[in-house]
Length: 42
Image 1 (cartoon, helix red, strand yellow):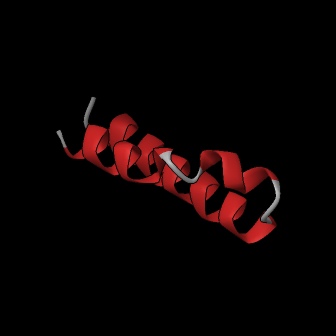
Image 2: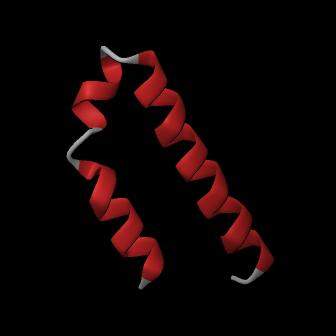
């Protein structure tokens, strides 16, 4: 459930990340962190 919730929280910012490089890096970091967690405990 935490994965779904954390993704839902940033969903509204995805369209803004095209114009804001820092926001894009933050979202990339979130995806990377989620992937590490999924790979550790699928």
